[in-house]
Image (cartoon, rainbow, N blue to C red):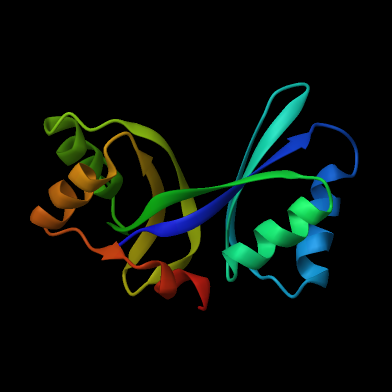
Length: 143
């Protein structure tokens, strides 16, 4: 029930983000969702794409530092307090959220969030045990 995410180390300078997206586009790779965290000198671009291995290969060939991470996609009730319910369930079991970001597509009446946990297996057990839907990677890669 994991989703593959790639993380790309990019210098925080003009044109680097455009270069990454151009490389992926030219290779026929579709970006499903992304998150960018930056400092004054560099950034970490996190992407979920339709072909993780091909993306890693083409970016490495162009000199980028790329790593693969497993994250979890969770349906969030699209209502006030929906995210709070999930975070409280995780908190109750002592699970830390390292980071999270939104996915652009809706699943029925729910939103989708991408999570990176300190204890992924425990987080999945906690969330599924409380009735939250975990989405498989295949559901996200080829929407």
